[in-house]
Length: 249
Ligand code: FE
Image (cartoon, rainbow, N blue to C red; front, top):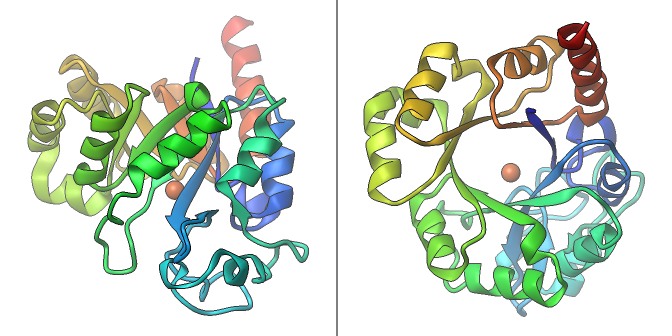
Protein backbone atom coordinates (compact mmCIF):
# COMPACT_ATOMS: atom_id res chain seq x y z
CA UNK A 1 0.00 0.00 0.00
CA UNK A 2 1.23 3.46 -0.90
CA UNK A 3 2.03 5.44 2.23
CA UNK A 4 1.01 9.06 2.71
CA UNK A 5 3.34 11.62 4.31
CA UNK A 6 1.79 14.90 5.48
CA UNK A 7 4.26 17.43 4.06
CA UNK A 8 5.38 20.00 6.66
CA UNK A 9 2.29 19.02 8.64
CA UNK A 10 -0.03 19.70 5.69
CA UNK A 11 0.94 23.14 4.41
CA UNK A 12 -2.11 23.79 2.23
CA UNK A 13 -4.51 22.74 4.99
CA UNK A 14 -2.83 24.16 8.10
CA UNK A 15 -0.03 26.54 7.06
CA UNK A 16 3.66 25.74 6.65
CA UNK A 17 5.22 23.73 9.51
CA UNK A 18 2.66 24.92 12.07
CA UNK A 19 1.89 23.49 15.52
CA UNK A 20 -1.75 22.91 14.59
CA UNK A 21 -0.77 21.18 11.35
CA UNK A 22 1.55 18.82 13.19
CA UNK A 23 -1.04 18.23 15.93
CA UNK A 24 -3.75 17.50 13.35
CA UNK A 25 -1.49 15.17 11.35
CA UNK A 26 -0.70 13.17 14.51
CA UNK A 27 -4.39 12.18 14.66
CA UNK A 28 -4.79 11.35 10.95
CA UNK A 29 -5.18 7.96 9.26
CA UNK A 30 -1.86 8.17 7.44
CA UNK A 31 1.62 6.80 7.94
CA UNK A 32 4.12 9.67 8.12
CA UNK A 33 4.61 13.31 8.94
CA UNK A 34 7.30 15.05 6.89
CA UNK A 35 9.25 17.91 8.42
CA UNK A 36 12.51 19.80 7.97
CA UNK A 37 15.08 20.65 10.62
CA UNK A 38 17.61 23.44 11.12
CA UNK A 39 20.06 24.18 13.96
CA UNK A 40 19.97 27.41 15.96
CA UNK A 41 23.09 29.33 16.98
CA UNK A 42 22.84 28.03 20.55
CA UNK A 43 22.40 24.34 19.82
CA UNK A 44 18.64 24.07 19.41
CA UNK A 45 16.94 22.13 16.62
CA UNK A 46 13.99 23.83 14.97
CA UNK A 47 11.28 22.31 12.77
CA UNK A 48 10.99 24.77 9.89
CA UNK A 49 11.24 24.54 6.13
CA UNK A 50 13.32 27.53 5.07
CA UNK A 51 16.80 28.29 6.39
CA UNK A 52 15.50 31.76 7.29
CA UNK A 53 12.39 33.05 9.03
CA UNK A 54 11.80 35.61 6.27
CA UNK A 55 9.32 33.85 4.01
CA UNK A 56 6.84 32.26 6.41
CA UNK A 57 6.91 34.23 9.69
CA UNK A 58 6.67 37.80 11.00
CA UNK A 59 10.44 37.80 11.71
CA UNK A 60 13.54 37.78 9.58
CA UNK A 61 16.95 36.20 9.93
CA UNK A 62 18.88 33.02 9.36
CA UNK A 63 17.87 30.34 11.86
CA UNK A 64 21.46 29.13 12.27
CA UNK A 65 22.48 32.64 13.39
CA UNK A 66 19.59 33.17 15.82
CA UNK A 67 19.08 31.81 19.33
CA UNK A 68 16.36 29.26 19.94
CA UNK A 69 14.41 31.86 21.94
CA UNK A 70 14.57 34.30 19.02
CA UNK A 71 13.29 31.69 16.58
CA UNK A 72 10.54 30.62 18.99
CA UNK A 73 9.32 34.21 19.25
CA UNK A 74 8.47 34.27 15.53
CA UNK A 75 4.81 33.97 14.59
CA UNK A 76 4.13 31.72 11.59
CA UNK A 77 2.10 33.28 8.77
CA UNK A 78 -1.31 31.59 8.29
CA UNK A 79 -0.43 29.52 11.34
CA UNK A 80 -3.15 30.70 13.75
CA UNK A 81 -0.58 32.58 15.79
CA UNK A 82 1.65 29.56 16.31
CA UNK A 83 5.42 29.60 16.75
CA UNK A 84 8.05 27.28 15.25
CA UNK A 85 8.36 23.99 17.14
CA UNK A 86 11.57 22.41 18.33
CA UNK A 87 12.38 18.81 17.44
CA UNK A 88 11.76 18.01 21.13
CA UNK A 89 8.26 19.54 20.85
CA UNK A 90 7.50 17.45 17.78
CA UNK A 91 8.70 14.26 19.50
CA UNK A 92 6.36 14.99 22.43
CA UNK A 93 3.47 15.62 20.05
CA UNK A 94 3.96 12.24 18.32
CA UNK A 95 4.87 10.10 21.34
CA UNK A 96 1.33 8.70 21.48
CA UNK A 97 0.58 8.87 17.75
CA UNK A 98 0.61 6.03 15.21
CA UNK A 99 2.07 8.42 12.63
CA UNK A 100 5.82 8.03 12.07
CA UNK A 101 8.48 10.63 11.32
CA UNK A 102 9.97 11.45 7.94
CA UNK A 103 12.74 13.86 8.81
CA UNK A 104 14.35 15.94 6.06
CA UNK A 105 17.89 17.15 6.68
CA UNK A 106 18.08 20.65 5.22
CA UNK A 107 21.22 22.55 4.19
CA UNK A 108 22.04 26.03 5.40
CA UNK A 109 21.27 29.24 3.54
CA UNK A 110 24.09 28.76 1.03
CA UNK A 111 22.95 25.23 0.19
CA UNK A 112 25.80 23.61 2.19
CA UNK A 113 25.13 21.02 4.89
CA UNK A 114 25.33 22.24 8.50
CA UNK A 115 28.48 20.95 10.21
CA UNK A 116 27.96 18.15 12.75
CA UNK A 117 24.19 18.53 12.52
CA UNK A 118 23.05 15.03 11.53
CA UNK A 119 24.45 13.32 14.68
CA UNK A 120 22.65 15.89 16.88
CA UNK A 121 19.33 15.28 15.14
CA UNK A 122 19.78 11.52 15.54
CA UNK A 123 20.77 11.88 19.19
CA UNK A 124 17.67 13.97 19.93
CA UNK A 125 15.37 11.49 18.19
CA UNK A 126 17.00 8.60 20.05
CA UNK A 127 16.77 10.43 23.38
CA UNK A 128 13.05 11.04 22.85
CA UNK A 129 12.36 7.46 21.76
CA UNK A 130 11.47 8.46 18.21
CA UNK A 131 14.51 7.29 16.24
CA UNK A 132 13.04 3.82 15.67
CA UNK A 133 9.97 5.51 14.14
CA UNK A 134 11.95 7.84 11.86
CA UNK A 135 13.00 7.65 8.23
CA UNK A 136 15.21 10.36 6.75
CA UNK A 137 15.44 12.28 3.51
CA UNK A 138 17.64 14.90 1.90
CA UNK A 139 18.28 16.51 -1.46
CA UNK A 140 22.01 16.41 -0.61
CA UNK A 141 23.90 13.19 -1.23
CA UNK A 142 26.42 14.29 1.40
CA UNK A 143 23.68 14.52 4.02
CA UNK A 144 22.32 11.09 3.01
CA UNK A 145 25.86 9.75 3.46
CA UNK A 146 26.13 11.39 6.88
CA UNK A 147 22.86 9.69 7.82
CA UNK A 148 24.18 6.32 6.66
CA UNK A 149 27.27 6.77 8.82
CA UNK A 150 25.23 7.66 11.90
CA UNK A 151 22.18 5.37 11.80
CA UNK A 152 20.77 2.31 10.08
CA UNK A 153 17.32 3.90 9.86
CA UNK A 154 15.83 4.18 6.33
CA UNK A 155 17.09 7.08 4.23
CA UNK A 156 16.15 8.37 0.81
CA UNK A 157 17.62 10.78 -1.68
CA UNK A 158 15.27 13.47 -2.96
CA UNK A 159 16.00 13.95 -6.66
CA UNK A 160 14.89 17.34 -7.97
CA UNK A 161 13.47 17.75 -11.49
CA UNK A 162 16.67 19.62 -12.48
CA UNK A 163 18.97 16.86 -11.20
CA UNK A 164 16.84 14.18 -12.85
CA UNK A 165 16.92 16.11 -16.14
CA UNK A 166 20.65 16.83 -15.98
CA UNK A 167 21.84 13.40 -14.86
CA UNK A 168 19.16 11.28 -16.45
CA UNK A 169 17.65 8.19 -14.79
CA UNK A 170 20.62 5.89 -15.37
CA UNK A 171 23.15 8.21 -13.72
CA UNK A 172 20.73 8.94 -10.86
CA UNK A 173 20.51 5.19 -10.27
CA UNK A 174 24.31 4.85 -10.52
CA UNK A 175 24.84 7.64 -7.97
CA UNK A 176 22.34 6.07 -5.59
CA UNK A 177 23.95 2.66 -5.90
CA UNK A 178 27.48 4.05 -5.58
CA UNK A 179 26.49 5.68 -2.29
CA UNK A 180 24.47 2.75 -0.99
CA UNK A 181 21.27 4.80 -1.06
CA UNK A 182 18.35 2.36 -1.00
CA UNK A 183 15.53 4.71 -2.02
CA UNK A 184 14.95 7.77 -4.16
CA UNK A 185 12.06 10.22 -4.29
CA UNK A 186 11.20 12.32 -7.34
CA UNK A 187 8.69 15.11 -7.95
CA UNK A 188 5.35 13.53 -8.82
CA UNK A 189 5.26 15.41 -12.13
CA UNK A 190 8.53 13.74 -13.24
CA UNK A 191 7.35 10.24 -12.26
CA UNK A 192 5.95 7.73 -14.70
CA UNK A 193 5.72 3.97 -15.12
CA UNK A 194 8.94 3.77 -17.15
CA UNK A 195 11.03 5.66 -14.58
CA UNK A 196 9.53 3.66 -11.73
CA UNK A 197 10.30 0.39 -13.54
CA UNK A 198 13.90 1.43 -14.13
CA UNK A 199 14.43 2.48 -10.52
CA UNK A 200 12.75 -0.51 -8.93
CA UNK A 201 14.37 -2.81 -11.52
CA UNK A 202 17.74 -1.58 -10.22
CA UNK A 203 16.72 -2.70 -6.75
CA UNK A 204 15.88 0.75 -5.39
CA UNK A 205 12.67 1.83 -3.73
CA UNK A 206 10.74 4.53 -5.58
CA UNK A 207 8.71 7.30 -3.95
CA UNK A 208 7.38 10.72 -4.91
CA UNK A 209 6.97 14.13 -3.37
CA UNK A 210 4.74 17.18 -3.89
CA UNK A 211 1.51 15.35 -4.76
CA UNK A 212 -0.91 18.10 -3.80
CA UNK A 213 -3.72 18.11 -6.40
CA UNK A 214 -6.29 15.32 -6.80
CA UNK A 215 -4.70 14.40 -10.17
CA UNK A 216 -1.20 14.22 -8.62
CA UNK A 217 -2.43 12.15 -5.67
CA UNK A 218 -4.34 9.78 -7.96
CA UNK A 219 -1.24 9.43 -10.13
CA UNK A 220 0.91 8.45 -7.14
CA UNK A 221 -1.65 5.84 -6.08
CA UNK A 222 -2.06 4.47 -9.61
CA UNK A 223 1.73 4.17 -10.04
CA UNK A 224 1.87 2.40 -6.70
CA UNK A 225 4.86 4.36 -5.41
CA UNK A 226 6.13 3.41 -1.97
CA UNK A 227 5.23 6.77 -0.42
CA UNK A 228 4.31 10.31 -1.42
CA UNK A 229 4.38 13.61 0.41
CA UNK A 230 1.42 15.96 0.15
CA UNK A 231 0.46 19.40 1.41
CA UNK A 232 -3.15 18.18 1.52
CA UNK A 233 -3.13 15.13 3.83
CA UNK A 234 -6.90 15.08 4.47
CA UNK A 235 -7.56 15.14 0.74
CA UNK A 236 -4.97 12.41 0.13
CA UNK A 237 -6.57 10.18 2.78
CA UNK A 238 -10.03 10.52 1.24
CA UNK A 239 -8.70 9.86 -2.28
CA UNK A 240 -6.78 6.80 -1.05
CA UNK A 241 -9.90 5.49 0.71
CA UNK A 242 -11.89 5.92 -2.49
CA UNK A 243 -9.11 4.27 -4.52
CA UNK A 244 -9.05 1.30 -2.14
CA UNK A 245 -12.81 0.87 -2.45
CA UNK A 246 -12.50 0.90 -6.23
CA UNK A 247 -9.73 -1.67 -6.46
CA UNK A 248 -11.42 -4.03 -4.01
CA UNK A 249 -14.88 -3.63 -5.62
FE1 FE B 1 10.94 18.81 3.32
